Length: 116
Length: 114
Image (cartoon, rainbow over all chains, first blue to last red; front, side):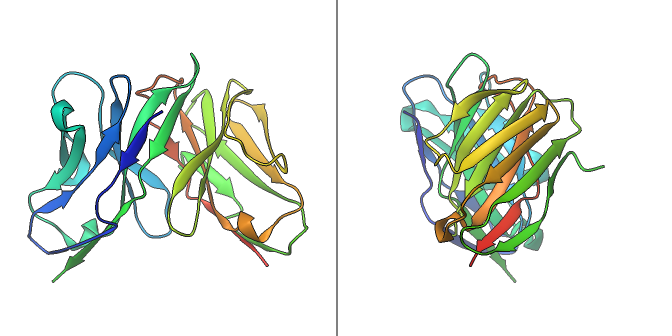
């Protein structure tokens, strides 16, 4: 079984400060890892994903994440927070259930608050 | 152009009623999903269809019945609604079912059962 743990349900940073959202996963097979963002009253939007290859993945809006197998982590970072980054962030791991469908298992989410 | 659309956006109803939520995607994807997001924002998959065939059913009560008339549509019918069904329901789609497929989400349907 696959699982995702997001440490910290709420993170508050000042505008311009570093954003660090933590994600640890559990998987018995090589994982595919995702970060999604959910703005208020909207659906989820993909920020970035790790499949294979380069362990540092760059996404939209200046976000990036690094896959660290030894630490089973996939933390999300952004060097400088903007007010528009305030949202709910979900880490997810993908696993194969059959030959034709992927199943995303989500973490419990981290709400990012950005203050002036 | 909305890639994944859901109707209605809001749904308020009484316990015991039957209701449907519709989902359509214009991305040409062949796999569609329903997720439930509870009041604590936890997201869990309910169903997945590939080419109109059910491939994931995550121990959801049989009061929930998905129907896929074609690859572009996946509807969710709920019988005998209960208070615990109150949640946000998201439809999503992807190209194929590969584990690395990106899923595209609709805006959600906010269901409130009174």
